[in-house]
Image: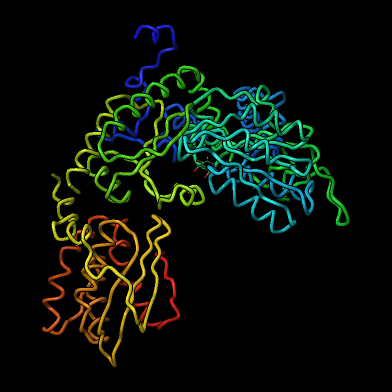
Length: 410
Length: 156
Ligand SMILES: Cc1ncc(COP(=O)(O)O)c(C=O)c1O
């Protein structure tokens, strides 16, 4: 297939050597990057180096080391701005993870801008993290929460989505890439349709950010939520991108040190975004580690990563669809890196245990998407998901282990 | 095949997983309870017909993995005809065996039943799967305690 030649190439085997975990676990086939990605040396060492040589609290001290730490923390913000092509680094708010980023928008933006009768639209493939904050807000403010469906092929149904929109729609909150079906949602079109009605759009980029280029300005979304640990970065750090004018019109959601201009007992003036939303001492090393992670990703190139994972997805779909009794959950035409399935007559949990015995690590269960499981009429799935270090040999090991499992439960 | 895995999925376990015994609702239960494992979505309902201090009949329904289905099936087989006190003793013994806990002395009459439950003790090597094996027993215990109220117990 020489058309591959003019695509950016990626050598997964060579890249795997950048991930120390695979040296410790040489026979491990890690197919759970959608839950959390492994960490490259650049990230692990970057964090250690920061603690060894540059650490102090930020935005506090007058001494040199604190200034240095502050610089590195704010440079990390700039790195992430560039990574997502935001217009201004003040649009990058550090959070603990994607869940916190979404909760921030629900509690700050939602409480300030929404009133009884307003409507929020989500999709039917959302992770609980992009359902529960809106459900809670609905109950608190008397909103309506509408669910836009995907069709039986796993494709987001734009026509039915459009039919749900009205002048009452104030927010559309959808995932960029489903953590269960692997479907890439047509977020560009979703943003256009929502904006025509004057609704804001939040995109949950937890699964998309690690595997495709993301340009928030090209998307035109108002908010984009990302979690660092799926992006080859450390746990405990995430990012909320928010358009500056949107962030500026939002009140603090947690208050405390680092968020203020002036505190009097009768009144407080809060500082501008992003620091308005970063109460208390932030995860400084986490932000630095995440900056190292996005540098690592940029070093490989997101087009190359996407092309690699697309090829793996195609190969995986082909391999798995030839296994008798294996039912794939539909993921639409533009499916990326995530394959969910069930084996006839074998419970997902049993599949997971047998695969683990073959050193193939997959996730089993409802994947924090119970409403989707209910819609599909299943209790859970086995989910294999790919990262930049996976290759076709991993998928061969997966299908061999599935065959062994079928044999056992025959 | 790996030994631990063979130990976990013994033929008896696979057989009971595929063809569970006493797999239906009771028409006139005196006690009912549901067990739910939120982690994997498994749900089972345990039905008892208690007569005096004896378990006259016991059955279950639901969906679950091979381990929880086999555990429920084998449980119903050993519980039928037992006194409530003996049933509780069996559960304590089974629990200790699958979690590696302290074994207490057991009347000789129950030894054969403990033997029959032995195939499930392979879960010991799989800490995340122990809950699957104990779920039906915990539902059984909840049924004893709640009568027809139909309590739901959850793992964790
Ligand atoms: C689509 C999606 N959204 C949100 C999350 C939540 O990520 P985190 O737990 O890091 O906040 C996940 C990860 O599980 C996810 O897959």
